[in-house]
Length: 211
Image (cartoon, rainbow, N blue to C red; front, side, top):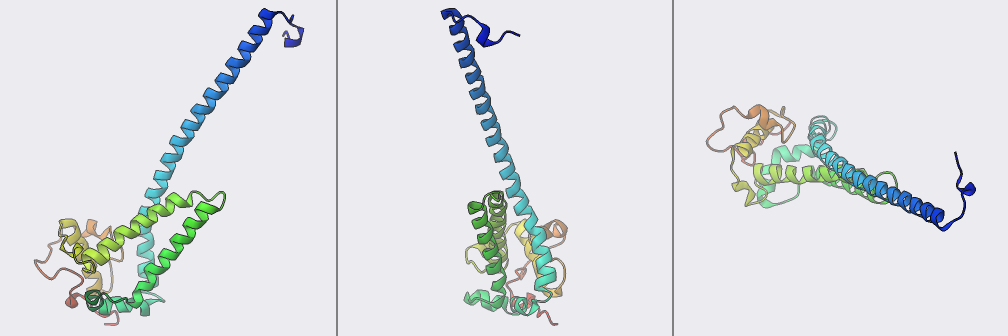
């Protein structure tokens, strides 16, 4: 194979060498652009997937925490919600049970800080964006629609919200399943819903956990 050094340094040869070098750099830049575009697209898909995983995974976390923590070693805090939710929500007073969403918020804030500031942990940002979206939906459904803590939201009345309300009311009455929040509607879908007094915010539906 002939090396470039053995070629005569005529103007024509030098022009060919320069053209080859320019074409090589152009191909390299084109490949880098394609690679960067592919990386951006792949990164976007991965971020979206992490958001979905964060949202969906929180339903499982909610179930486990509700069943084995809130109705476990920290039941004394959660008992305030089962006993006093109607009165507390009507007066918009905080209750000891509010410690749990506050603790979740601190975990989310800490995870997002790490994701934004620590190298190699950027994936925590989209994951906990999904967790945050779940928290917003959970609060809207549980506090706003089911318990009527937000005045205008308690007027939302669809088959889905009524099925969630019925499922949550069953939990308050029996102090048992379902412990989840968004999935119980799948199992309660075909059950008949009472014509009135279905909201878990009604006093009748709040049975003390020790009864």
